[in-house]
Image (cartoon, rainbow over all chains, first blue to last red):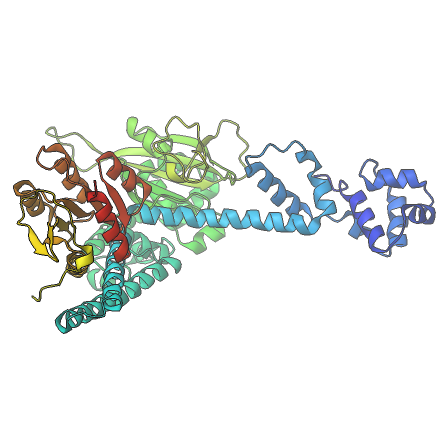
Length: 438
Length: 152
């Protein structure tokens, strides 16, 4: 929207607010009423001196007549219009609409924003509902108890001649079922509350480890200089690491992070990043280490170090040969699915086809937000080489936010098919829940 | 266990031949219809047993699918109430096998489930369910549905 596009509309609004006729205002500023009419309908630009005269006549500062505070409204209303399935022939008259009905436009923009926020919530809840065995079981348990209570209560209420033994029996059943119901409801509320506070209603050991690292800002200072010899008491004290399996995974993760930290000490890494920028391949060459080491290390740096070097928080995904995600550090604007595989178009999966070949791709998230990232990926063989079994590969992908990227060849990717609005994608596995009729 | 006395008004006053012995009530020759309830929640099956017995049904209960299938094959009931979530095999499996065998193919099935998603409903319909109801249910609805299913 051009800055002046709405000036005429504002002039008209101010004039009517003051109860002035077009002819009155035209006379006050020394133009013809028909010319003022053209201005008010945004068909003529207003010269600076005339704007000053109009502002003075209307008793406002000229800023008020040209100010750009409606940009957000325009963007909100336009986004709402573009989301709509309805053919809008008069989309170009959006300025007109906002100028004439700023209140309604605000409602539209606000409603649209709300829809977007709710969609995010739906995405998350859907992910949980679809795949979360605990939630499914808990709800089933509650519905069972409700069914029993309702049916039994109806019997007690309807049957006036109920034998005392049956009455006792049914009273007992109601008591036990209401107890079950209360317990189930409390457990469910706790579970959902834990999700609200950012904890994940943790189910799998991998999620426990991710929750622990997320709270720690994906950096454990111990790996930079401490010893991991007697790590058990420390792991035991971390609330997220509730299960023994999670503590084992965390210990392995710490060992890996420490090895990465030793290969790429902070001080030297800072210097290299200063020299090369975020160019993982050059850093790997300079340190003589694998690209996967650099990718992991870049996603697990201390916050202060990143701030000092002006590095944004980076996302990281690691998967095995089955495509199962072994580790997820989401980048802002690039969520990873909590369950199931990710988007098949991610370079993470492409890397599995060409082991040890470094890949780089520009990504843009599908849909309206369209966040841009530089993705670096490589798949490496892990473990000792054995002739008796296929090599075990692990792919690593680093996501570097890159909003400045201008690239028409960027690959549009999603988090997972269910929450991706890209309908004509050949890699689509299942319909999207976000788009009607998908 | 104390006997639940059937309400005479609800007893089927038909003269259908069934394997069960006829009982004489108020001058009518009545036959009790048999319903098998497959439900693993004891309190729910007890409530169902009560409301159906009160309505004049002869009620049998099984808590798991395998035992229920054996009983079904041995003596097909006049109707079946089937829970979807069972400990061993799910209600869909029971229904599938029921519909695959000559002896049990015709038994009308009322599926009662806490899962009311349309996908479940569609699958049940494909497998040949007679009625599909979601939990929690109203007692009267279950009774009415069952009666409608066995009324020619």
